[in-house]
Image (cartoon, rainbow, N blue to C red; front, top):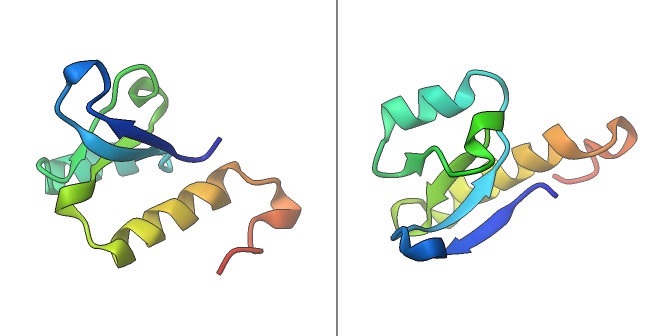
Length: 82
């Protein structure tokens, strides 16, 4: 699994996509744009980051999803998505 859609899960107010991030990226994104990014419950401790859908462009979201795929995919498939 490389992305999770969250629609106000447990009434937390987030309509977001949650993706894994490389080491150190989660903290950097949240510090830079706390309205756009957040540390999600359960998977946040493992470096995943929540991305608020009403705060991100489709183009930027696509970049985060592609990077998440590259982090999770087997090495021989990592570059199969452009």
